Length: 216
Ligand code: ADP
Ligand code: ZN
Image 1 (spheres, rainbow, N blue to C red):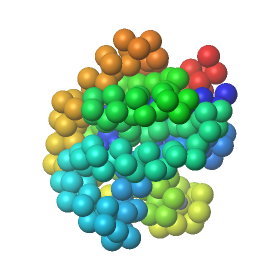
Image 2 (cartoon, protein in one colour):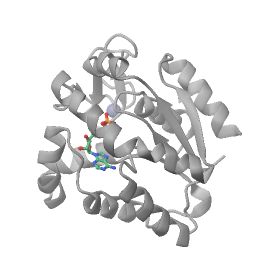
Image 3 (cartoon, rainbow, N blue to C red):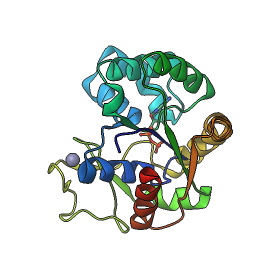
Image 4 (cartoon, protein in one colour):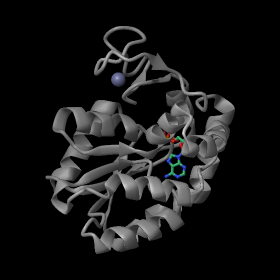
């Protein structure tokens, strides 16, 4: 079941939570461009300095930077190893460029799982969201609490609220999602690789549905 899979959906749709569980419970090779970018910002690297302002404002980091990051990270990946992407691609330009790059390496996308979700739900989820500053695992103060308050179950890292998880920034991110990322749903539907998860469900049910789709 080592497929090459993309999780698509608005911020707060729960795809990051599902991706994290697929990684720890089933050993999926999961990556999150958002988590990588936040790590670069924290390190103060050249890339982090270029990306920082975009992250803070809830805007998309330029395609070239993100594409370079993903290509470098997948350069050693073997086709049968698979990958599970959360948060990439996010623009049509990223999708088209990645398809071309991946195809010649035998790393073409096999399945896209779309987490369908309304703005109201996104807002309620994101304000309670906390994530591990170390490994990036995602929690929710009420819906997915950690075993020990403020600490990651996985690695013991400190749980933090992201600077871009305020209501104003989340609304803006949702608008950007609708404009830049949602067109990818049609793009992948036309390729015949799209499956849909109802992301208004609790995370356990989304997890079950995603597993069923991955096993198809
Ligand atoms: P969310 O899905 O909740 O928005 P992410 O961690 O996926 O959270 O992304 C956080 C931020 O990182 C985005 O708002 C954007 O600034 C940047 N980012 C992540 N992935 C991409 C991408 N593929 N293209 C451009 N910017 C990205
Ligand atoms: Zn952690």
